Length: 227
Image 1 (cartoon, rainbow, N blue to C red):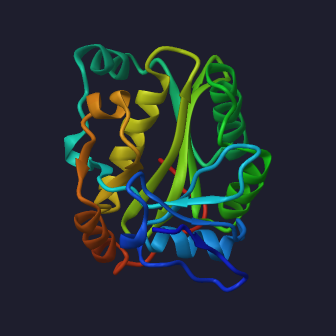
Image 2: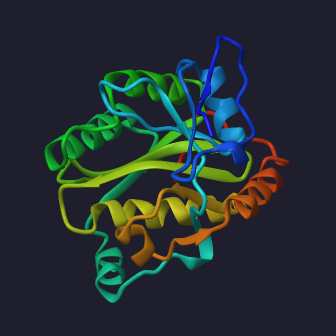
């Protein structure tokens, strides 16, 4: 099955046309309009520095239902100590650029390219992308970011330079999303880390159904606050 080549038209092919590994389309741009259309259709960009823009819709899909988040004894202890100060939408740029730097050091490059950073910074300015920050001694030591539409949060990346910092950020995000009656966090691709935290793989068809239901509700835009 050939990969769909995007044109200037704001459109994507049906997700069931994706290749076995989840690749659906190539090309297009990272404009806010195209990115939001992609997320609404269960599609996300993921590509390396020298690649064209690649669009994905994997089957199965990794999802974290909010009540399924596993909090280990050690993490519960860290939460009780209130070791980290946690904020939301305070330093989106710091979170996304640190995610890029750490992934670049730990792997052969990173998919969070300068082009991606600029695109998600724009979504943040428009109130669709959000970051949760964990601070220790006034230093950013952990966090995560993603995109919010309806009652779905699409997680993009997370980092920690201190043990449990990103997990604490995730717990605070889960609590915030639950207070706003969100349904789930889309984790996209499976990782051992996320599976240990309670994420589960579901069929793409089920994910699309859950997403359709979540998108029936208004999107909580603008700057978020944990207070």
